[in-house]
Image (cartoon, rainbow, N blue to C red; front, side, top):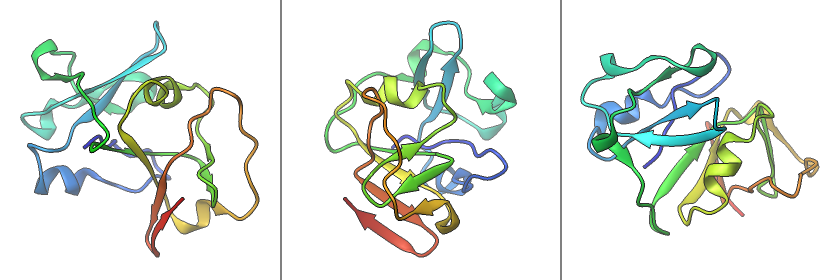
Length: 141
């Protein structure tokens, strides 16, 4: 399962890694290439400031997760989500480029205050989430 280290406004999923360290992997952003990759961790202390100062796993090839299938889940952050699977990220497209060709299921994770009723404007390269998780519950699209 792909999880993320939170920015100030995001839901903290680090405790999920604490319960399931063998099942949860963290993303690393490669600013130069515009790509995102997920890596397994041995310890949370291995996370170091990465792109934008967000803690990221080290680039250790044997810890990189490249094989994803339809039964895998990637929990995705965002500034805002709508009730149709639309997501507004930070505008760099890292998750969209990663999720586009990937068969894993993407679920948005946010606070209920970040959910809007009206459809968000979506670009042709934007990837929708199949579900949304907030402190009030789950929504499947």
